[in-house]
Length: 128
Image (cartoon, rainbow, N blue to C red; front, side, top):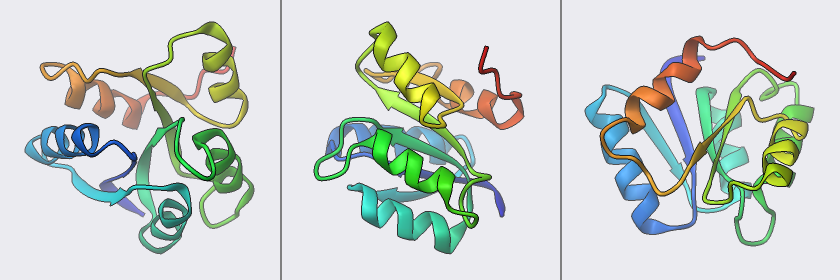
């Protein structure tokens, strides 16, 4: 496992570029996937410490990809953070139920984004 590697699974090019740039500036190594299947392949191959998962992806959504990652022995240890513009309580519950450890809301808050992501590296899972 690479302790400073983050996989971003995001289909919106602007969100991907902003997120990856901010995290690279903070010292993280970034892997990028524009859809879920390539994200699964990268997660298995590179074993990132954390995945930022867009929950509204084409083909298979982030909820389904999260479940697949958590069911696989090669990837079930990787922390997954929902990365979404949806802030409805139902969406939060669904994200946690499928295995996400937390949620980061879009649009990206440039000043605090990298610190918010970094906070998940040490955070204990809270599913209460």
